[in-house]
Length: 229
Ligand code: SAH
Image 1: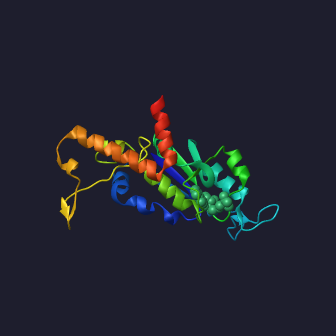
Image 2: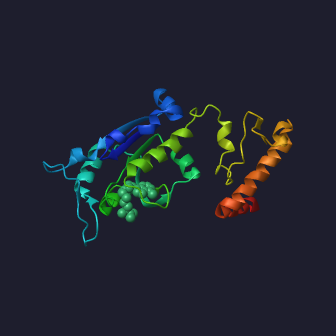
Image 3: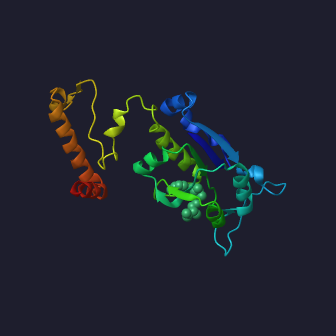
């Protein structure tokens, strides 16, 4: 997967993506990332990229002409996304969908965001990582990319470990344990030591259902609805 990121802070990338599983996948050539410094396309000698909002209001907005020039010069087609609190929520199914693309282009906002006309002119899709406001799209882009790279073929050693994870089947994950079997008097549940695969799977599903019901009634309702069809 080839990733291109439009940003005012290119040094933020690849950030934590260079570590651990995503870092190994980068060194193996499973993904690569280029940045475009939006400021390189500024039109004045001060490198201005933002201006006050039309109609008044607080903060600054990234200018359409500067960002537009950057995108025209450097965007080579394919899926283009603006990280935005107004976007469609990033979910595991959206992550799966994005992981099928050969290229991803991501635009990161700063200040109060970007001029609406740029979104329209390039048919940019907006994606949000949650109902809270960050200072910049770079943080959100790294999170989106981490979740997408993680599900690219061959990135996780054990593909099976993807299947039972939280959200993959509309349920949160059941509790997990490892050694020692007895930790300061706290024991691993007997069932997990029984060696009886079906009973273990039944117990884990039951736990997943209970936890989802208690913590995420919205998700639990979706799970129930999915069982009806
Ligand atoms: N005024 C905007 C928020 C601007 S925050 C509004 O009310 O919607 C500055 C930048 O951070 C945005 O341009 C966006 O790129 C990024 N950002 C902030 N919160 C985000 C979120 N929850 N998901 C994705 N990107 C976000």
